[in-house]
Image (cartoon, rainbow over all chains, first blue to last red; front, side, top):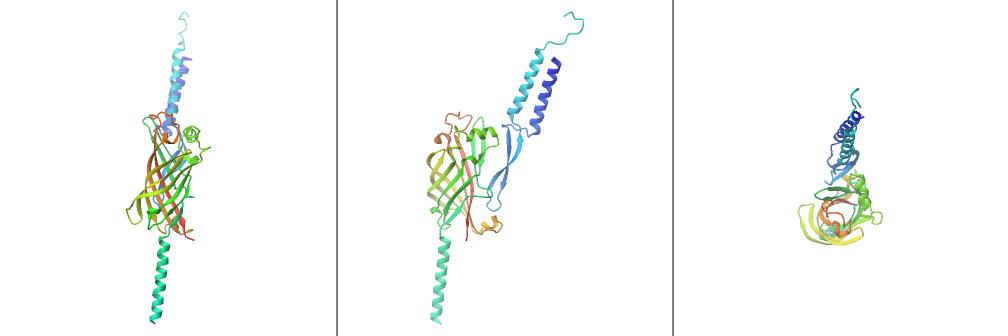
Length: 88
Length: 210
């Protein structure tokens, strides 16, 4: 149990960081749209066009790493498996 | 012969006078923009968080006379529900009762009442200070904002692929307002959400010729 919780904690941490990096490693909050700056050729005005794209924010990173830390902590609380014949 | 020449001169003079009167006549520009280019950018830059978004639900009309930019009058309307930030939860809060209350205050408006410090800065551009009534979340305050006006004669055709002919008026302005002046969640901590809102308007209005 102790070992499995440790493995799951590491897996959650790796997946969280990989997901955060893959969606843009944003240091802001999560976004579901991303602004693309454009310029109107006739008037010269700049404007933003929003594209639908998911960008994981720091709260998702924090949540994933927090969950990983909790799992790791729980794994430390589990009693290690004793070798056979240790008397308990 | 002399009589004919005098008649011709008179007719030409009248035509020129009518022509220049038509040129000098105030034009009404419609700022409803089907291309979605017209926009207002808002920025609240607090030490802990920077909120940056746009609004593109722009409409309204402005009366402008190229020969007399100081006579500018009009009203610009921004649909409050068109304010957008990329974070969906932040957007929901921003539209909610404590912040903009867009369900009850559907429009953000600016009505120009006076123009001052008019300076011609180029063939097509003029800068000025426009004083007007700014209404946000049901609160109206008189503010003065710097504007840059660009009059683009005969450029509507280029923007509509020749479907319409006419002139364009581009208005650019950047100014600050205070969140607390308009009752926008005055209790929110200023280190997290700035009290100062920087607004940048980029607008183009069309005056089609019939």
